[in-house]
Figure: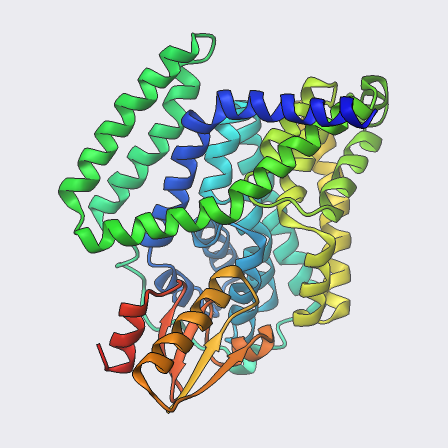
Amino acid sequence: MLYTLTLAGLFALRDYIATHVLTCLVPAFFLAGAMVTFIDRQTIINSLGARSSKPKSFTLAALASFFVSVCSCTVIPISSGLYYAGAGVGAAFIVLWVAPAANILALVYTGAILGAPLLLSRIAAALVLAFAVGYAMSWIFGEEHNDRAQEPAAEADNIIGKREIILLVLLTLTLLLPNYMGAGESYLYKVTVWAIATMVMAGYAYWTQTSDRLNEWARETWWFVKTIFPLLLAGVFLVGVLGEVLPETMIRKYLGGNSLGASFTATLLGSVTYFATMTEAPFVDKLMKMGMGPGPALALLLTGPGLSLPNWLAIARVFGAKKALVYVALIISMGTVTGWFFGTFVL
Amino acid sequence: MKIIIAGSGCAKCKATEEVVRSVCAEAGLAAQIEHVYDIKEIARLGVFLTPAILIDGSLKMSGKAPTSQEVKKLLGIG
């Protein structure tokens, strides 16, 4: 029994490593490292101070979150820092929600593994939920920090240079092109596309960046490899084992179709379990192949990296139990409805 | 000199503390080094991106794990 399970896990690992490492993971890690190195996150955050109009501050908070952090661990200090600096409870919780649920890295990686429809739905759903969370939180808890509020010092115009934007776009292409142009083609074809895109990107980086910046980029990339790669491998192994243990009929029964029930199950699973950034995509991929519907899949993609039990506790410690409870309840109920809605009408 | 490292307990935060301690020890610098883990306290220090280094109350670096070269520069001994 144990032998079969280990074997199933190892097979899953072998498939994953063979098909994903070069054309998905390597570019993803370089992209993650580049986001940290070339985007001035401090300037983005500074521009998010308290603003008088909610639509403006919420939009800004939601958009900034695409770039500011790639996992739920680093987002809590950012969100609490904003809150105590007077940004208002709505904006703080928007950052807390959007950064892990829909940052550029997670989105591009989702697109590479799961395809465009789920990617676009993930963006749309994350934004809709962000505004709902922002309005609900500030309606329930008011703007008690208004006394400390101050207009942000300066409009951010030095967040990122033109050359760095081009570099990030090229990096995104090294991750997307092999998986879109190579869909249905041989693995060799994929690798060729990847190699060409990577050479263009590397050449551009080499010509436009100083060696200091390149070194820093390499260091940051290595950090992501060190922290995320073991988690990814463990996750993929676990998925392989689960695939062996859980009969497909059960997955079809509880996560199949696009019913509210299936969506709720997926949302709950995502809200309680810790998914390190990027691990949610292969997990969802496997479950979909075993019969999970697209609606529940979206719900799991959204809540998986955004919420987890340890995360609830951290949020409660920083923002107080009441706000944490309301936030979690909001996400679970809205995640359920979103999964059902997108599954039924969009996907 | 008082050095505060603001870190939420992440791997990079631990690495930052190690680098700061080893640089200070190597240079024979008698600095008081404190690691602040509490996220509320970190917010009060004005830090958004962990890990961060504050020297005598002013924010010197945030959002990355520094190399020992960078720490030496911050301490003015590089």
